[in-house]
Image (tube, rainbow, N blue to C red; front, side, top):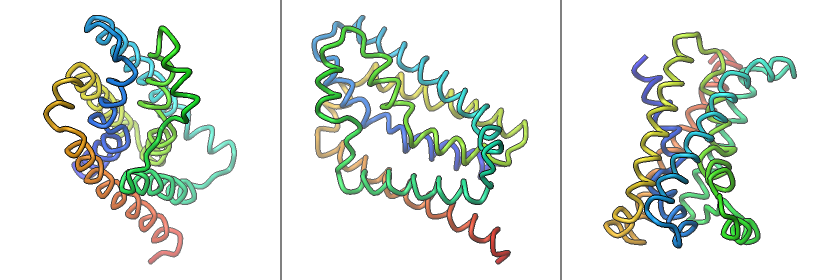
Length: 203
């Protein structure tokens, strides 16, 4: 059980990447007052939490309806997570296109887009939740709900502390942290694929 909690937390934490997210948040809210930043961050986290919970609870029944096996889901999820990790390691992790960023900057309320989705709750976190929830019992689902709450709480705290965190780490420090998280995520992704292949072939 401890291994499940650790894997779930590390996977979601690395994918969401609160520290890297804080730098993007600063760029999107550079003209905001501290009160506006706090309100925007809180709204984005709440919306992202709702989306992640919906995916957690409804994702597996939907896949079962489509006839997708647990092993296929784990392999696909592991491969997708690995692509996220690779983009982090190659410093090419652009979550928005230039047009999306320009559109976001022109909006008064950026809490829904691009903050809540896809920056906080995006394809990577959705895939991770589906993989982690597949085959999980009620107790493990409850643990995942708790993990989501903890990770999103950390996201909110880093958004509130975005300015001092960026000042402390600098661009180089933020890049180093992102790459370390990428290595961890790559290892977790490979392990997901290994576990699925082992079950398929009965190794």
